[in-house]
Image 1 (cartoon, one colour):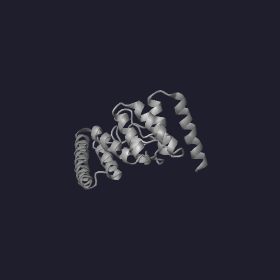
Image 2 (cartoon, helix red, strand yellow):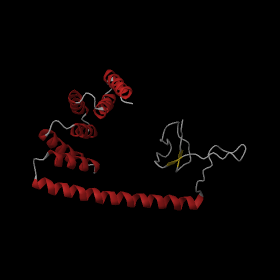
Image 3 (cartoon, one colour):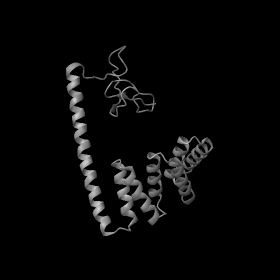
Image 4 (cartoon, helix red, strand yellow):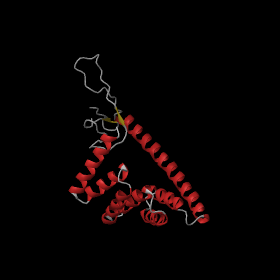
Length: 195
């Protein structure tokens, strides 16, 4: 059982978990055990303290903001490229699917829904479109249509673990215990049959 130490507050996580209940921080380090010192702490982790720690935190936050800005620019560039391709081929389901995914990543759920709906109408036999469209509907608070879409995808692809897992998650959010248990058993059977 592996546990981690939060890179921000130094608190240990639960076994096999990367969740820090205090800071929700995502940078984790494995604790180092110092066996040379008797009675030493389990984790020999140096945390910056005082003014130095504040400056280090500010530097990391600035670096993170820079990376997010660069990723946003890259995402906007990709959306522009796919929109140009859409002008040339307005009835291509792959273009609508990619535009839906990129606008979903950009948190424009209405645009993502429109593009993924169009991709679904043009090609109803693509499981990625089903799953992404269901995710967008869940983010928009439309759990019923998302459940129906994933159940129809389950009928088309009965052994697809992504479809089964997403169906289980939506059923869990809708408090449908029987469906959650059925999907969990199906996933367990798939896992045992495909080691």
